[in-house]
Image: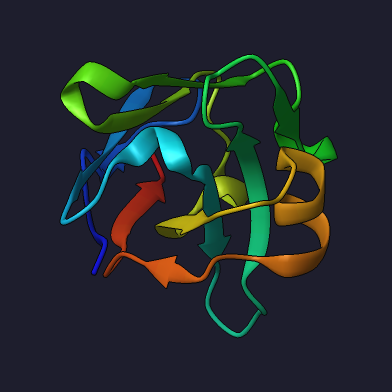
Length: 126
């Protein structure tokens, strides 16, 4: 069974940057669309960005467009989320997820993940 482990979260000041990583084991990552989702305190989990199995297609939700970049290295079985110009409202637990046979847009906006990591905390505060 596919297992996902996130890393790279932490405390950063507004305007700063972080890079999250999602490392996969137990499966071949290029078979899956991979997405990053986040859940802020008291709110539902929502999509952030998703990427197709070969990396050719990506989707970003409106709050992060122009600031976040998703990428993947299938040789390393790892997906990344580069987060720049961070804002306090980006504070959340960030989850990595995987789903086969879906597009990045559908995964981010409709279906979510079939497999989930445990999450990593991102806090943006001065």
